[in-house]
Image (cartoon, rainbow, N blue to C red; front, top):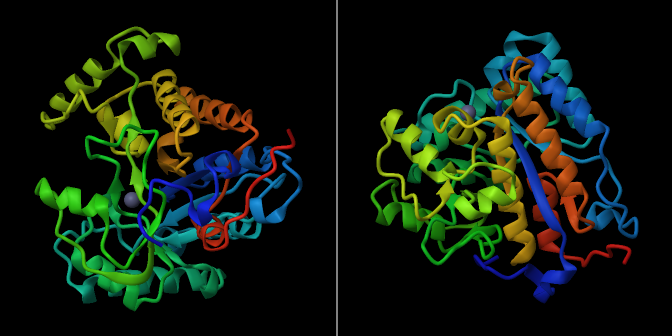
Length: 343
Ligand SMILES: [Zn+2]
């Protein structure tokens, strides 16, 4: 599957689902993961025509990229992961120990993947279900992909995508296979951030697109004061990152970058999520990847929980939206079917 800004299978944009993938990394705490599982259980994808192949009318799904060591340490967390898996969510490999592997060899990656897999199997998860990988800290190198391929996984989701100037949130790439490398990786390589990764035919990349930040006039439409981008710029600089391109209006698509590094509140976070989704819906409906961490949604941060719940409900008010796992998305892309929105 080539990187493409058009939907697969020659389908018209108006015929494809707007896929959303909620993904949560690390997952060390029972209470935070239980909150989002409970919430998702109470929400279903739009009815459509009831077609299982377009994930109509089923409880919404997410993916959990968990470190094996957390399951080793907690029976309750293990139970919760089994419950998630049995409810249709995806559990995937995020290494055993969450080291920064940017200088890892292939063998070091493989060791961390294997230990994590063993922890998952010990927890009772079937090995066949464990098909995805995400690097800790988005810190991948060329060896990561050699290891992911050698480990026999279906996909990686560590590459940032959408940061070239010509991409504006409405024309992002759909997921692709790495048979000719990755456009997002090539861009990161050109700006000196990453090694160039090799070619890995058959290995899927489900990229992490940037979140789109509303400009001043757009912020007001979401009920925010002007100056959201300036605030991000200022707080990034305070965190030691002073080269953020304010005009691009794009931030790495993880909750951590918005909530912890840019120090935005729930209301601002919600505006960014809605704006990013609106651009997709007005454009090519490239799948929306939400990079999250359950631990950032603890019960003492009610504004964050409210923001994510509101975003889910806002998204579900659109008849073309389908919350799926990356595995679901790859299945669909391998044999794409149009949706019926019941209109
Ligand atoms: Zn992580």
